[in-house]
Length: 299
Figure: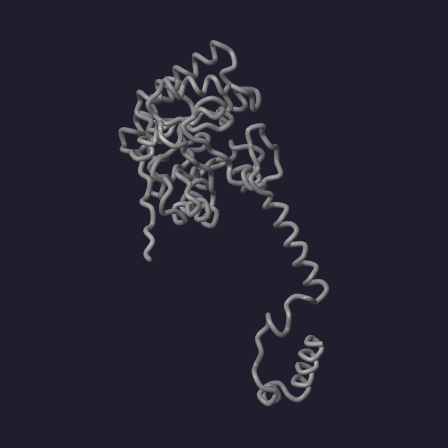
């Protein structure tokens, strides 16, 4: 019986998933986690700038550089064969000039991503997105709580709660759709607003803290599996506690090392061969010591 590897999900294929079965996406930041997520069937893997907090230990996403993002994007791209890989453009990578923004977006494509994600939907951001799209680089939008704007927002706060702010987000979603984005992330907005936007636009909405009506959902890999000890947002559901399992396993290993239970001389060590060969190589004393060790272990 032969098995066929699922085809790579392309940007047009991802866009066509609007209105179908919910789209399952998550973040990943290196080869092994990307390989696991890809083989589990993820539709999209976002190399998120959240790596600054969950992988690199920064206090926020603002410290992440383009070089760091490209390094991790290359690793994730090497670990995937099915999921659409989207590179998250970090702070100041698309804020200074149009030319620099396009150049940085192109670097993500050269690193193995099939698209990039850009935060914000105001007119100045739309102008940059259009220029990136003109360079044949697909763009995913991101509105609501945009972490790179956390200082301007005054913290990680729910967005779109009031009528004026909700109207702004609706307008931004429509502007991103009109500009040519193939999808948009809705982060930390009321479920009712996310449902309205999802119905209003023809491109998939991917929610994170935006209720169940979005076309798909995304979670941070380390939040989903309990690998991150930082703040747990209300919208995070833990499907495992891998961090606890890792600590337990490492503790057992260290205890075995300190008490001499690891490695086992019979099953986890290599040996020269016969006692005669051992004597020839190391002398009678070494052969006797080895024989004593093996005997003691077997007892």
